[in-house]
Image (cartoon, rainbow, N blue to C red):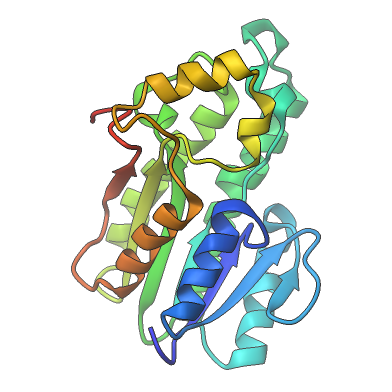
Length: 228
């Protein structure tokens, strides 16, 4: 990836931060974006509102954009555990605004900037494929991301390759929402017997950022949890 410029939304913690580190280790210039980002190698912004400005800032600084990773998403334990009757219009709009609209808006802005081609990687999740008792609105948003990925892969071919990464239970901040019993139950549901690591998610991102042949796919990384 030497000489490439990458933008990773939600890139200052968890999976996003691991992807930024992996891209830099592979030789890319990787810019991390979040609403609270500060310091060198970052850009501050809300993907649901500022997509054009975020992408424009990266291009202004570095002269190009080769890879976009749409990782930004709402992290909210109350929304994750909300039952059917607890879902509100405000909750629905807030999650879809970031997870789905933000993914679309950043992808559109990036596609305009990738004049010589590039890669767009969208982060999804296995509940979008198989459902879950928790995270109803989150699952809906990520299902939309998978559908968006397929359409963008056709619309932007052959210049840009677009793929989704559907992650299972990766050990990031959301695990802290779980009681010890819940955490053990999640781990038992995974044939590998453990949560995934952010670094393992980053390995998949590096593979897709390098590949010119894979497009329109949803690659599942879940330790066998969904078995799809």
